[in-house]
Length: 143
Image (tube, rainbow, N blue to C red; front, side, top):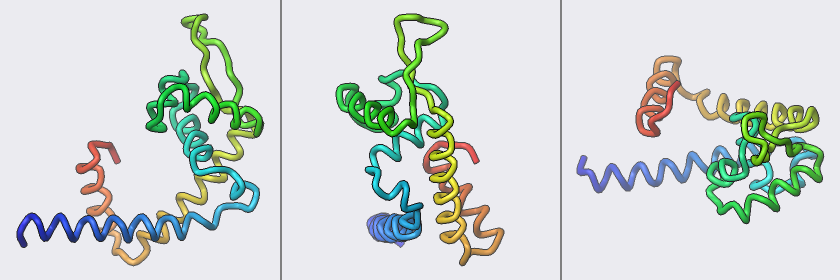
């Protein structure tokens, strides 16, 4: 198959995969459905990476630091994060999850894992392993 056909097929498959994931992930708890995707993405970034500098949070969200500040403000208002001074550089402020933030992150993570399991369900175990390995290769990540 020519590269242009493969590119078109991949584009269509990724669109379908994204739509399927969005549909499955929409089963999130009613408590978290009221929060913006950006807030939940920030919660995820902090939950996965641990305490982050505001610049690192902005990078993880793909926004400028001035746009990350109101997101952090909302998360703090939700009671999900707190700002703390870095122990290694007292000039630096970090955002970290509170206990309520940790519970919210774990609830959202469970929804994501359930959605991923549903997406992988039609594949055999070998196909799942191959699929994940190929995605890791494409994204440069580790399994």
